[in-house]
Image (cartoon, rainbow, N blue to C red; front, side, top):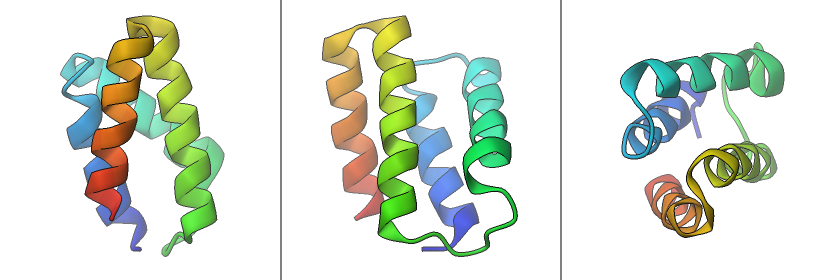
Length: 78
């Protein structure tokens, strides 16, 4: 999957639980720390990034919202 496509899916799903600023900041940090200069990301990297995002949502919004988030981002990523 193209990195930009994944980041778009991730941002769209984060916007459902965080403010626009919070969602964009989370994506920016994840992109710099987990993805870097990669242009295409493989399923293992996608799963790792989804896990990081899930944990952030879980810590800040709780288990139920995090579970919904994880389901929606996995669906979006195919």
